[in-house]
Amino acid sequence: IAFADLMSSGTLTCQSQFRIPSFNQDFLSIINTICQSYRLTVVEKINLAASLYAETILGQPIALLFKSIVCIF
Image (cartoon, rainbow, N blue to C red; front, side, top):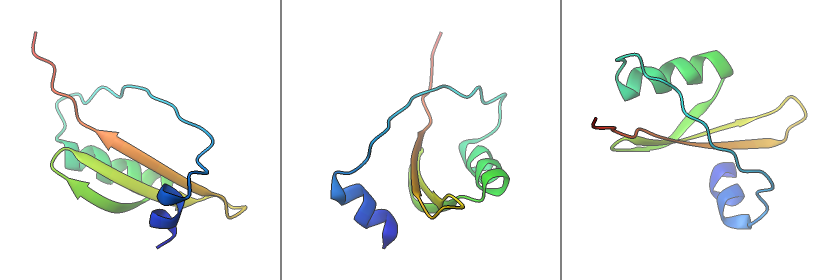
């Protein structure tokens, strides 16, 4: 519920984008590793996108969206 409230509130104050090389790992393995390492919860996973949520030690919400992008060279 906190994730849905955050996403619909219009109060998101920071956006950032960066790329994480996959090193031939599948998307689900990468998401699981990130969740375990940073104590994030998967809120929703659709195809190759996942919404993650956590709170800081001060109770501030953190919402992340991960997408897998296939590059063909």
